[in-house]
Image (cartoon, rainbow, N blue to C red):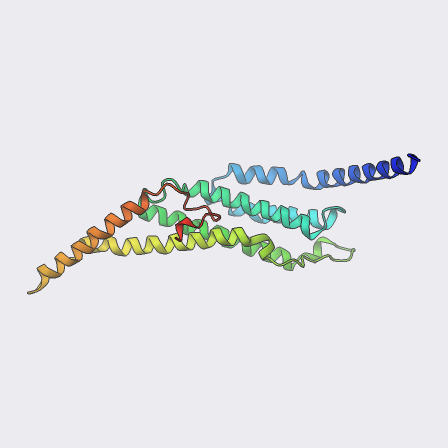
Length: 223
């Protein structure tokens, strides 16, 4: 009576073992790429993204058990999360509003460039997956990009918002140097000074907030 159950159990264990070996074999090469991405300054990580995606495509085309949309989506999400993590470490959310505005702007702009570049690399490999299959039937990525990039896009949108905010700050800071001549110059200059002082006070309050402004899962920044 127990034989059919044990037979089914044994078959399931053998199948699971074969799947685990296959996945370990093909995912193992990613370890080195992940380590490189973690150890490299984010500003210099652009050159690592194509090789990383190349390995992902090799996994997709060669692993019997990993050539499934659900599993690849999870893997790509984790890669996106790693890139977000590295960008946050590079930008340092705890000091981003306390550092030099021009330097912060440069870091934000560079981060946006690298994130946009990764999305371009993803699209290039997605649209050119066929060569990885050679003499076998091609299995394309049919899932919607939003399944992978929802959090990534939210983070990128947050960076665009902060970039716009810094541009606004720079424009307001120019008011400190504005001097108006003429009959009404003194009165107008006083008004401009008042606006500048009020803005600086608002900026100081904003910059003192303790939440993580780079957390794409926290809507507090927009509120």
